[in-house]
Length: 281
Image (cartoon, rainbow, N blue to C red; front, side, top):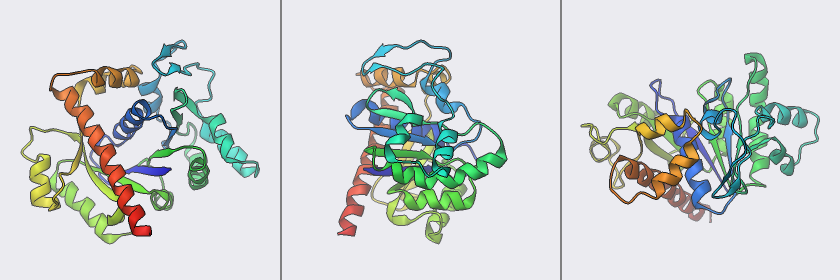
């Protein structure tokens, strides 16, 4: 079991949510393991739109029928909040409030739709939900929303085995993130993977140059490239279909590069997990 948190302290758009759901989708397709994606957003339909076409019927795919019915509870976090407050929560109950993306492999606990006041109360339950989910799923991936209070962010980041810290290719943003890691309050150097979101390989500030001049590491910094097809397909509920198409590609282009970088991020996370396990022995 591993808990992976996606986080950004960057004011610019880093593609944090898209990167997190892309990794979860890739892992759901490639691994025969149970993955739970937890969104901590408020009134944000991005995840639902990426995975489920509007008013779609149930379809049979590579991994059996997807649960696309509109009758599925899209606000499962609110139901879990009520169960927790009534002290009737058990690990298995988590699955009653998720939505299936890939049967037996990939489920989503969507963000809260409602008032800011209630959202502040629901934030208090995320840590317990994560701890319970660890007992049911092989991997738990959490998208930490910018709007979460600092206390909630610290709790989630502390519960994570690995943190994917997203930033842009701007030097100031990268240095700011490095400074946050050095402070050791929100992020810890030992389990944080700095990742460039919406990455443009043609930029002067490419991964190799950033690694050499700013990160000063032997290993090339991870990236999640900007991809036009991805941008289009997540607006139409076709993220899973897109990954299946990309995985079948043979030619070298921006689409295969995107898949290769998502795969490399997955491998970096696994490597970080192994190192941390060795350190704990």
